[in-house]
Image (cartoon, rainbow, N blue to C red; front, side):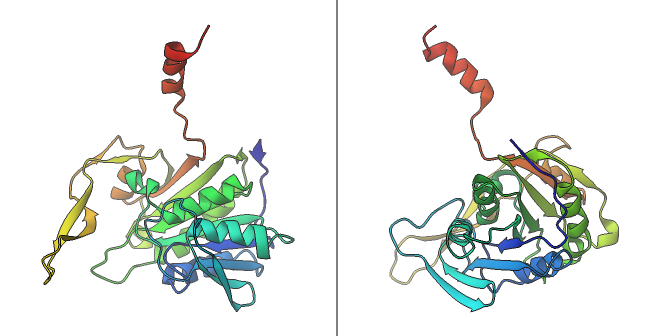
Length: 263
Protein backbone atom coordinates (compact mmCIF):
# COMPACT_ATOMS: atom_id res chain seq x y z
CA UNK A 1 0.00 0.00 0.00
CA UNK A 2 1.08 3.57 -0.62
CA UNK A 3 0.61 6.87 1.16
CA UNK A 4 -1.75 8.95 -0.93
CA UNK A 5 -0.31 12.36 -1.80
CA UNK A 6 -1.77 15.13 0.33
CA UNK A 7 -1.70 18.89 0.42
CA UNK A 8 -0.76 19.82 4.01
CA UNK A 9 -2.69 23.08 3.81
CA UNK A 10 -5.44 22.98 6.42
CA UNK A 11 -4.59 19.43 7.54
CA UNK A 12 -4.30 18.18 11.13
CA UNK A 13 -0.63 17.79 12.14
CA UNK A 14 0.78 16.00 15.18
CA UNK A 15 4.14 17.28 16.45
CA UNK A 16 6.42 15.12 18.60
CA UNK A 17 10.08 15.28 19.65
CA UNK A 18 12.65 13.69 21.94
CA UNK A 19 14.24 16.89 23.30
CA UNK A 20 11.26 17.61 25.55
CA UNK A 21 8.18 19.81 25.70
CA UNK A 22 10.20 23.00 26.25
CA UNK A 23 12.79 22.42 23.50
CA UNK A 24 13.48 25.28 21.13
CA UNK A 25 13.45 22.90 18.15
CA UNK A 26 9.84 21.97 18.91
CA UNK A 27 8.88 25.65 18.84
CA UNK A 28 10.67 26.02 15.51
CA UNK A 29 8.76 23.01 14.15
CA UNK A 30 5.47 24.48 15.35
CA UNK A 31 6.27 27.69 13.52
CA UNK A 32 6.95 25.68 10.34
CA UNK A 33 3.74 23.67 10.75
CA UNK A 34 1.72 26.88 11.12
CA UNK A 35 2.66 27.77 7.57
CA UNK A 36 0.32 24.92 6.59
CA UNK A 37 -2.41 24.89 9.21
CA UNK A 38 -3.70 26.08 12.57
CA UNK A 39 -4.84 22.55 13.50
CA UNK A 40 -1.66 21.54 15.32
CA UNK A 41 -1.45 19.04 18.16
CA UNK A 42 1.67 18.67 20.29
CA UNK A 43 2.60 15.63 22.39
CA UNK A 44 6.14 15.77 23.72
CA UNK A 45 8.07 14.17 26.59
CA UNK A 46 8.07 16.07 29.86
CA UNK A 47 11.88 15.83 29.93
CA UNK A 48 14.57 15.16 27.34
CA UNK A 49 14.52 11.59 25.98
CA UNK A 50 17.41 11.74 23.50
CA UNK A 51 18.82 8.31 22.68
CA UNK A 52 15.64 6.53 23.76
CA UNK A 53 15.23 4.94 20.32
CA UNK A 54 11.93 3.09 19.77
CA UNK A 55 11.37 2.28 23.43
CA UNK A 56 7.96 1.93 25.07
CA UNK A 57 7.00 2.41 28.71
CA UNK A 58 5.70 -1.04 29.62
CA UNK A 59 6.24 -1.38 33.39
CA UNK A 60 5.00 2.02 34.56
CA UNK A 61 2.07 4.32 33.95
CA UNK A 62 2.24 7.02 31.29
CA UNK A 63 0.95 10.36 32.54
CA UNK A 64 -0.41 12.89 30.06
CA UNK A 65 -0.71 16.48 31.27
CA UNK A 66 -2.62 19.08 29.28
CA UNK A 67 -0.51 22.23 28.94
CA UNK A 68 -2.93 24.15 26.76
CA UNK A 69 -5.48 23.45 24.05
CA UNK A 70 -4.00 20.70 21.81
CA UNK A 71 -0.67 20.70 23.68
CA UNK A 72 0.28 17.87 26.04
CA UNK A 73 3.29 16.90 28.11
CA UNK A 74 3.88 13.15 28.40
CA UNK A 75 5.83 11.33 31.11
CA UNK A 76 7.16 8.77 28.67
CA UNK A 77 9.22 8.24 25.55
CA UNK A 78 8.75 9.79 22.08
CA UNK A 79 7.16 6.52 20.95
CA UNK A 80 4.78 6.70 23.91
CA UNK A 81 3.86 10.22 22.79
CA UNK A 82 2.79 9.10 19.32
CA UNK A 83 1.06 5.96 20.53
CA UNK A 84 -0.85 7.76 23.28
CA UNK A 85 -1.80 10.74 21.15
CA UNK A 86 -3.28 8.69 18.33
CA UNK A 87 -4.93 6.01 20.48
CA UNK A 88 -6.32 8.15 23.30
CA UNK A 89 -6.88 11.90 23.09
CA UNK A 90 -6.77 12.09 19.26
CA UNK A 91 -8.59 8.79 18.76
CA UNK A 92 -11.64 10.47 17.19
CA UNK A 93 -9.64 13.19 15.42
CA UNK A 94 -6.49 11.47 14.08
CA UNK A 95 -3.73 13.47 12.41
CA UNK A 96 -3.15 13.67 8.68
CA UNK A 97 0.59 13.99 9.21
CA UNK A 98 3.15 13.30 11.95
CA UNK A 99 6.22 15.55 12.21
CA UNK A 100 8.99 14.66 14.69
CA UNK A 101 11.64 17.16 15.77
CA UNK A 102 13.25 19.41 15.10
CA UNK A 103 16.00 17.56 16.88
CA UNK A 104 18.97 19.59 18.13
CA UNK A 105 21.70 17.51 16.54
CA UNK A 106 21.88 15.32 13.46
CA UNK A 107 20.14 11.98 13.13
CA UNK A 108 22.18 10.37 10.38
CA UNK A 109 24.20 7.21 9.82
CA UNK A 110 24.47 5.02 12.95
CA UNK A 111 22.66 7.58 15.10
CA UNK A 112 19.37 6.77 13.38
CA UNK A 113 19.16 3.56 15.41
CA UNK A 114 19.47 5.49 18.72
CA UNK A 115 17.22 8.42 17.87
CA UNK A 116 13.95 9.01 19.70
CA UNK A 117 13.07 11.57 17.03
CA UNK A 118 13.38 9.05 14.21
CA UNK A 119 11.56 6.44 16.33
CA UNK A 120 8.61 8.79 16.78
CA UNK A 121 8.28 9.08 13.01
CA UNK A 122 8.61 5.31 12.69
CA UNK A 123 5.76 4.84 15.17
CA UNK A 124 3.63 7.22 13.13
CA UNK A 125 4.32 5.15 10.02
CA UNK A 126 3.56 1.90 11.86
CA UNK A 127 0.18 3.36 12.82
CA UNK A 128 -0.51 4.20 9.18
CA UNK A 129 0.20 7.93 9.00
CA UNK A 130 2.65 9.79 6.74
CA UNK A 131 5.52 10.68 9.04
CA UNK A 132 8.67 12.78 8.77
CA UNK A 133 11.55 13.26 11.22
CA UNK A 134 13.60 16.46 11.07
CA UNK A 135 16.99 17.21 12.66
CA UNK A 136 19.31 20.22 12.72
CA UNK A 137 23.08 19.90 12.86
CA UNK A 138 24.26 21.70 15.98
CA UNK A 139 27.59 22.97 17.24
CA UNK A 140 27.10 22.70 20.99
CA UNK A 141 29.81 25.27 21.60
CA UNK A 142 27.48 27.95 20.34
CA UNK A 143 23.80 28.67 19.87
CA UNK A 144 22.05 26.43 17.33
CA UNK A 145 21.25 28.14 14.03
CA UNK A 146 17.75 27.11 12.95
CA UNK A 147 17.62 29.34 9.85
CA UNK A 148 18.18 26.53 7.32
CA UNK A 149 15.34 24.46 8.76
CA UNK A 150 13.02 27.48 8.88
CA UNK A 151 13.83 28.39 5.29
CA UNK A 152 13.70 24.99 3.61
CA UNK A 153 11.49 22.69 5.71
CA UNK A 154 8.08 23.94 4.46
CA UNK A 155 9.04 23.45 0.81
CA UNK A 156 10.58 20.02 1.42
CA UNK A 157 7.56 18.81 3.40
CA UNK A 158 5.19 19.99 0.68
CA UNK A 159 7.22 18.31 -2.05
CA UNK A 160 7.51 15.05 -0.14
CA UNK A 161 3.76 14.91 0.44
CA UNK A 162 3.00 15.62 -3.23
CA UNK A 163 4.16 12.15 -4.30
CA UNK A 164 3.25 8.60 -3.32
CA UNK A 165 5.47 6.68 -0.94
CA UNK A 166 4.97 3.27 0.60
CA UNK A 167 2.93 3.19 3.80
CA UNK A 168 5.75 1.33 5.57
CA UNK A 169 8.24 4.09 4.68
CA UNK A 170 8.85 7.33 6.54
CA UNK A 171 11.18 10.24 5.76
CA UNK A 172 14.24 11.49 7.63
CA UNK A 173 15.49 15.04 6.93
CA UNK A 174 18.76 16.54 8.22
CA UNK A 175 19.72 20.20 7.91
CA UNK A 176 23.40 21.30 7.85
CA UNK A 177 24.81 23.93 10.18
CA UNK A 178 25.36 26.57 7.50
CA UNK A 179 23.97 29.97 6.60
CA UNK A 180 20.95 29.32 4.39
CA UNK A 181 22.63 30.91 1.37
CA UNK A 182 25.46 28.35 1.65
CA UNK A 183 23.29 25.24 1.44
CA UNK A 184 24.75 23.34 -1.48
CA UNK A 185 21.71 21.24 -2.45
CA UNK A 186 18.67 19.29 -1.31
CA UNK A 187 19.37 15.66 -2.06
CA UNK A 188 17.79 12.24 -1.54
CA UNK A 189 20.40 9.84 -0.14
CA UNK A 190 20.74 6.54 1.67
CA UNK A 191 21.70 6.03 5.32
CA UNK A 192 25.47 6.14 5.84
CA UNK A 193 27.88 4.75 8.45
CA UNK A 194 30.42 6.19 10.87
CA UNK A 195 33.94 4.83 10.97
CA UNK A 196 34.11 5.01 14.79
CA UNK A 197 31.67 4.75 17.67
CA UNK A 198 31.05 7.05 20.65
CA UNK A 199 33.71 8.24 23.05
CA UNK A 200 33.48 6.94 26.62
CA UNK A 201 34.46 9.62 29.14
CA UNK A 202 35.46 8.68 32.68
CA UNK A 203 33.97 10.95 35.36
CA UNK A 204 35.69 11.64 38.67
CA UNK A 205 33.87 10.22 41.69
CA UNK A 206 34.93 10.97 45.31
CA UNK A 207 33.55 7.58 46.36
CA UNK A 208 35.89 5.87 43.90
CA UNK A 209 33.15 4.21 41.87
CA UNK A 210 33.65 3.68 38.15
CA UNK A 211 31.58 6.44 36.57
CA UNK A 212 31.39 7.08 32.85
CA UNK A 213 29.47 9.19 30.38
CA UNK A 214 28.85 8.53 26.70
CA UNK A 215 30.29 11.51 24.86
CA UNK A 216 30.32 12.61 21.25
CA UNK A 217 31.31 10.18 18.48
CA UNK A 218 35.03 9.72 18.00
CA UNK A 219 36.42 12.10 15.38
CA UNK A 220 37.02 10.25 12.15
CA UNK A 221 35.93 9.90 8.60
CA UNK A 222 32.40 8.89 7.69
CA UNK A 223 32.10 5.69 5.76
CA UNK A 224 30.28 5.44 2.46
CA UNK A 225 30.08 7.21 -0.84
CA UNK A 226 28.72 10.64 -1.67
CA UNK A 227 25.15 9.35 -1.79
CA UNK A 228 25.03 8.79 2.00
CA UNK A 229 23.33 11.13 4.50
CA UNK A 230 26.48 11.86 6.51
CA UNK A 231 28.51 12.67 3.39
CA UNK A 232 25.73 14.94 2.11
CA UNK A 233 25.56 16.98 5.30
CA UNK A 234 29.37 17.20 5.45
CA UNK A 235 29.35 19.04 2.13
CA UNK A 236 26.57 21.41 3.22
CA UNK A 237 23.55 19.66 1.69
CA UNK A 238 20.14 18.98 3.19
CA UNK A 239 19.73 15.21 3.22
CA UNK A 240 16.45 13.34 2.77
CA UNK A 241 16.45 9.60 3.44
CA UNK A 242 13.47 7.26 3.10
CA UNK A 243 13.55 4.77 5.98
CA UNK A 244 11.75 1.44 6.15
CA UNK A 245 9.92 0.07 9.21
CA UNK A 246 10.62 -3.52 8.08
CA UNK A 247 14.26 -4.25 8.93
CA UNK A 248 14.49 -7.60 7.16
CA UNK A 249 17.62 -7.87 4.98
CA UNK A 250 16.40 -9.41 1.74
CA UNK A 251 19.78 -10.72 0.60
CA UNK A 252 20.57 -12.46 3.90
CA UNK A 253 17.04 -13.87 4.07
CA UNK A 254 17.49 -15.47 0.66
CA UNK A 255 20.74 -17.11 1.79
CA UNK A 256 19.16 -18.38 5.02
CA UNK A 257 16.23 -19.88 3.12
CA UNK A 258 18.72 -21.87 1.07
CA UNK A 259 20.43 -23.00 4.28
CA UNK A 260 17.41 -23.81 6.45
CA UNK A 261 14.15 -24.02 4.51
CA UNK A 262 13.02 -27.29 3.13
CA UNK A 263 12.49 -27.61 -0.59
